[in-house]
Length: 244
Image 1 (tube, rainbow, N blue to C red):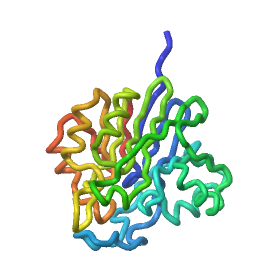
Image 2: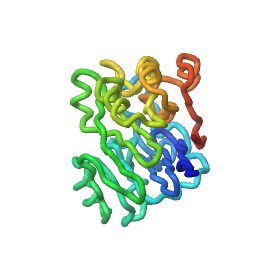
Image 3: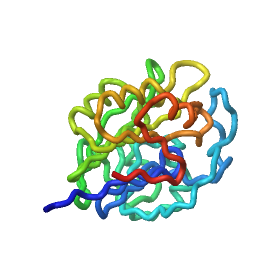
């Protein structure tokens, strides 16, 4: 009798996660800065420097890197220095040239899909906010990791029909959402809040995991509030692993 691959997602900090499918591990959106090394994101109600919290003591061993977009809380100078220059690095096409200029020698832009080991990587759409903010913050991407089990990592997006279509098309076993309800002093949130997470929970039978919490100054939704507001959703602490 065949057995399905082990699948897990381990939150490091913010949107930095380790996605493991079988024997293959992807490091997603590496943010390696020490607390306070980065300035606060401007035009927000909270002016504390970033990151707000230290990295947990986590083994960051990985086979490949995936970067959803180049905003500083998803890929920073410390990650650029610390990552191996020849690591396979998957990204959206708009960011490929910049990674090459940074000195990475194995940059693999994903237009539609790509393969690595026994995993097919699909790039999916995202909407990083509402109205004018969505355009200002673009481009962003999510990624689906498909083997005999499937992980959908939505990236920096709010709930909209692109996320709904991805859930319908891939029927993932595990969904990773960027929460925190990041926002500026004007306009609506640019990442998922309570209502967005609840909409995803209602739209899928998958295990839903919410990260991107309590690490960057413009993320105002707390873990405690989200856990109390939405049932049957995993909201891990930094360093925590969720396994199927």
